[in-house]
Length: 147
Image (cartoon, rainbow, N blue to C red; front, side):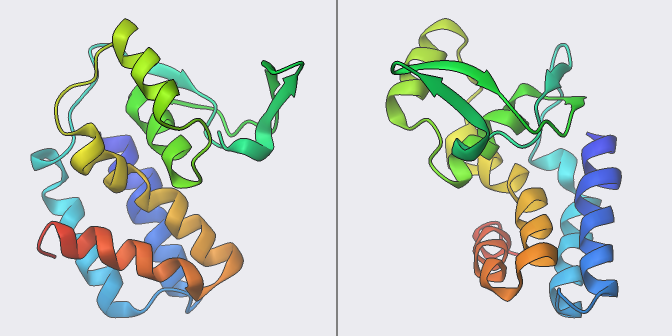
């Protein structure tokens, strides 16, 4: 959790603020979240190797089956981080999660809260790269937890 908080969430928010991509009041709210992130996120039993940029454009499909993944931004962390990223652009969908959870059940609260919190990081990356169109998702997530 400290790596995600310090080297993902806070780092990207501060860089986006420094570049004037993120409004300062939103940075303040993200810093408040970071101060209490342990109230929302959970530590994994064992960290997993994460692709880090798992969306439809980085999934190679051949004959209707996944054949490979490209363009990794590798790190280690909670497997939920990777799963959350796939929800950002609807990479796999409901059937994927049904099968996944039949094999590896997720802790309660992933779909309801943690996926959105984990997606703050890629949302902030997108704010820096592509602009203000991604601010609404960040705003919604923060408002959803009362920040």
